[in-house]
Image (cartoon, rainbow, N blue to C red):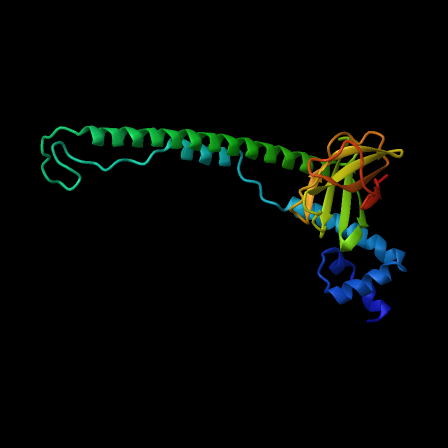
Length: 250
């Protein structure tokens, strides 16, 4: 592949569309071509923002409405006419045995327990939906901010990371792609770099290799950010060497 051909691969590389051999050759080219490196950073940031921009948002209250109906609608019993059974045969007047009554009461108790369980599940689902919607709104608010600026960098193992900062919102969003999963029992933790002092900015989902995270806390005077591997639940201070260090966009 000629150098001229390599110059045309910036878009495919930013979208992770190259095969392993092409990716390795293009990354060697990037080390010696500042123009391509700059173009890749810009295209990666744009792709991250466009991906979020075209996501579909359900109507407000849609999920809550569905869960409310599941929680409140009961199946109707079979309808019978007076004096007949379900099959239409005349009922025989007889006393309900104690065993039958006990079985009915047990069934009612079981149904009552199921109803309580369904109510709790529906309540938890509604709460999770609200929290997810709030997080999505906050991410979108940062990405759509008039002063939003982005910076993209290559991370270890072929991964890439883009940090988008809005000084007006005093918030930052980190977009990761192709990140290797951390070791079992570990998690990636984000940090703000306050002139050499690392301040926790939240945890990433250890089960996802691509994700968009609203970084916890204000950007304030931070000049950069970092990522370390920490025990599940995170650490108050970094306990390992950073897997990535990035300068925040000016």
